[in-house]
Image (cartoon, rainbow, N blue to C red; front, top):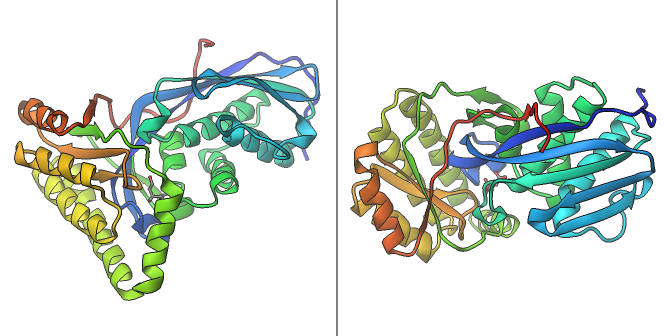
Length: 334
Ligand code: MEV
């Protein structure tokens, strides 16, 4: 097994994008495909070795300042919420590759963690990628995925890993749970409009809520998942052909099925309806539901009217690029 000592190494800075679920949420947790795109708000992370036995972490955006833990006690005792994913990522990496030197990690985030753009998975991916670079391991994307996904499951217990895949591979992906299949889509552009509901979604609780429904009505829920899968397949073709009218229609159909799973909310429904009334090709919630964001499709010409309509019902329009590059080493340090 490869071991690393206190060799002085140059700091490494990496960055990874956030994600936006386009089609297939919830069903993806149960073996069906989803479509996700990487968004242009990035997490930056710098790591360097320390002459100590400590992990030291500074993540100002989540109120973590000079947090430190002995390397052989990672994952034990108190962990501030904002430190969990990075601490467990370092633990998983060191268990696999036996890191002996102390580490100092600093993060800088371009995105508010409240939007549900996947800041936790982006920081997990950044940690594994940065350590792989620091120790010159040249881990493949799939190896980075497996360690990062294990970290996400260790911390939150649930999830398909689609957010981890978006942070690593970037672009837009057809994704199956646990990374069983990760297929990049050929997309030129995606005229998506994003509205934030102002409410933070509790992903784990919503996954549990759907699981409870599936326990009570297994056939109904399985039928919904199957129909979502058909929508995902059609949506893949539509967005690869830039047929956004068709993709929009499929969004609205997907939303109907998400409503039947009871994961939408009044606020999301109002924003989705407003977008459609203002001429969007279609709209749906994006992610776990209950809050976070909704998305709508409309060409550039019709975009302002849809944005205004979303704002009129209390949504916040978020302007971000989609289909952006995945995790990368940054030349400059933060
Ligand atoms: C949450 O953003 C999307 C879910 O499908 C959960 C997951 O895939 O990890 C509900």
